[in-house]
Length: 358
Image (cartoon, rainbow, N blue to C red):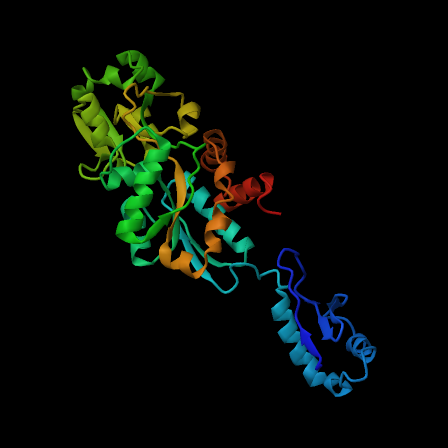
């Protein structure tokens, strides 16, 4: 029976880049061979083969053959630290401008890189319309989106049931765009709200959105374009639910809305319920008694073309969802927005603290 050299791979065992694993097949079948370092003296490899049965041709010990063999076997062993499920697969991850979106996108990138994917990360590409167009066109493959945003943008049935909201957006995106919503983080609800300063709240006796109804016609509201947009914005359904008619609505980024209220330029500002600026600026989040603002659970949304090419993207990213909570993301946003730490450093530290990265 002819002899053959075959690479033996154990994908669940992490090995250094310069390791060589071999198995010899003979009449007795496979037998394992000790790991040989590629930096070991070539003579060690030669001595190893010299100990094999005589019918194993010693002519194969030519240095040229060994060089070729080493390259082939190394590839078969999957020993490279840059190997893994994503080896050779290019992925582009994008994010919106908001700190929470940036943090989630950076986490996705780090998890994918750890599995060997060749990742290009494009943070702060813009607001929802920009990211929506980018993933449809293939400019990006993945970005973090929120269930409430998907429902608002495509006018899907509004619901306060998180599972139903997820089912609505998952089905719609798959059927219409060939984009898959992976498992959402149900423990993280990063919704929208209406805020104002403590001083303004006391002056106007504001505790809930209901309290705005009688006074809104004299007040100015600030919000981002994807919040106030009459066709696809988050606010119009809330406005209708409460019958709110503001004197004026101006487009200002969410983070600048707090300063706009403090300076007196506006009276009420759009805010994220997880924004630490609510506390640090001594603001009041007005209670949404009608539950008009949708639930916003984040999830990675991925082009089907990428999942077809590499199904491991799904399992790689879905390790994160159970580790995300509203409280945790609020603290992470604070580190970026208030403490001025970099998004990559905060994301990496979090993943390591959750044992998702070594």
